[in-house]
Length: 569
Image 1 (tube, rainbow, N blue to C red):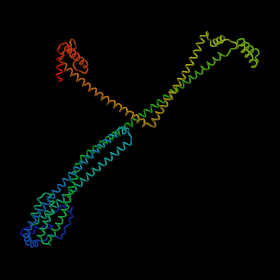
Image 2 (image 1 turned 90 degrees about the vertical axis):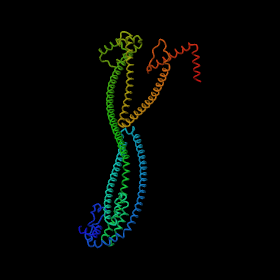
Image 3 (image 1 turned 120 degrees about the vertical axis):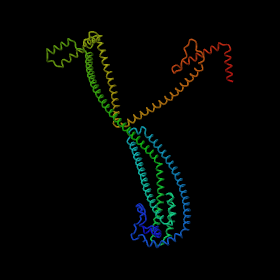
Image 4 (image 1 turned 60 degrees about the vertical axis):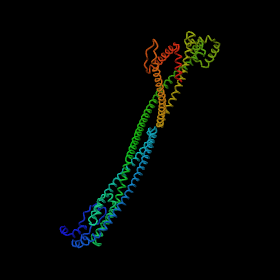
């Protein structure tokens, strides 16, 4: 380094960068552009060759001074064109932003309408059909919630992917900026392009990024003109120029990608509240679906418990019916036995009453004959009995009554009649009891049939019966709500009428307050809800008293009529 500072030629030679003296490039540039490694054999030229080439370079610099002004004018014109292009791009970006805002508004309106439709659909499906605990509707609701959750997760993953791509693009753009700065530093090392490189470095990053191709081209052209054609420095400068052009193209691409990602991020940032609102709405719908599902499960459990209770009640009723049936069968058997006994007794009594009796003389003769002979046959006794019966055919009614009294053990005919009437009453009571038992048996059969149908409904159609009960309860509730609404309307009308009546009474009381109270009457009654009738009666009394006073005056009526006529005119 000390030997190079000794002479001006060495200083001019030092202005040409060599691969060994060039600043170290960051690894990002090598990764981005794939710079091949330098060949060790292609090193910097020696000091003697640089000194030898110093004088022609000075002459070339003096010759390139007029061309530098032209280059500056070209740079200014190119910068003006670039400024116009930037203004056009800004206007286009504003138009794009306006279009994006309009699209976002349309999307917002569509999402609001969709949210309203979903709320309407949830309200429509949140009635009695979903509260019954049906498995189908609950499954559909869960499927809708799962599908919406999957959509939310996919959108979140897409958002994360966009953020990641944006970070990658920004990092790549930073690397390109670094490489561009390095290229600018390399180009600024050329003495003839120092002013152009300084102006390019003083520009903002967007302007430098846009005007980098023209500045680098001008600087490279000036440097190439200042160097020999086949020198290593010229070849290195051409390589750097090619790399600079490639880096500039890639930087422009990265800048456009960055703009695109910024627009995407801005759009996502604008749509984020809408998505959050939609997610909250979906979560609320999910909560409503879960609440409806829980209500359905509770209703199902209540229906199951009601079914079990109905089964227990049916079992107890069947046991009660069986016990009552056995008891009635037992009572009926006892009654039948009693009726059979009474029928046999009545039949025996009737036989004893209407079959003529054998006289005692014949009985004694029969007994003596049977005891004396002992060997008489049945055929010999039968003609005797038939003859005795033939002899007794002419028995009178008195004899029959006497025989009946004797048979029943009654001392009088009235007692016999009383006994016969008691038997008839017993028979009538038995017939009535039998008819009652038959009617009771039919009623019990109908009750058993109703209970059997109820049991069949509980076994086979429990859900249908529960649904019918729920529908009936809902109809009753709707009727009650309709009646309540009608009552509320009537109450409102009544309250308005009451308020109007009270206001009118207060107005009348204020108007007649100067009039005197009737003598001997009660004092002024305050206006209250309970004393409105008393206030009206007191107003009437005051008006009647005033009318009487006015009628007593001779000219008061005429004066009042004239005043009323003047007021009307």
